[in-house]
Image 1: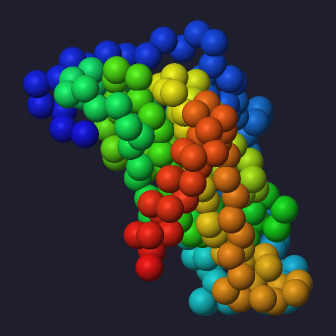
Image 2: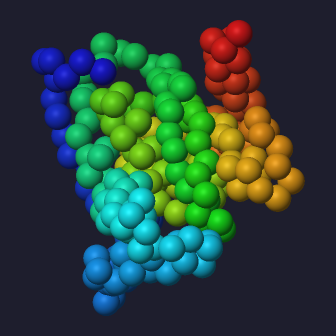
Length: 219
């Protein structure tokens, strides 16, 4: 949404779920970077390679650097992503849909990647949030160890509790490497999860419109 000529208002933090109100509390004591790099060396040796050979000498440092990017969601707070809204909507009273938001995450069971697209719709009440903030919210939760079901629920709950819209719809479709590269080894299989609140949960026609707009755009 265009922020020009709008009134910006922060949202209060009262009455929010713990995962919405704050970033996760870090483990104490947190392992040092040196301890983390030593753990990577151990895993390399467990895999059967020599962590002291030339090609692997800097691998532990690179892996820990990558972890800081891949799991930065542990340092971010959902309410701070959605805390500024715009009140000038010109009387808009239908839902807002942002589809095909690419994301990547890691399965908490095997620490293997899963990735795909998220689709978010919400029906605002007087105030709207910047569209890029919805994409950022996906990353806050995706860049943690996750299950797809939990990710879907958390995103929907955060939007519902912070923005207090008339309804929220979230659909996530993803491919899981723990299913594609190991176990049953079925590459290309997609998992779909949904979570609906408010009007999307209570009014079947709203769910149908949401799904129709998604599927119609994907043809």
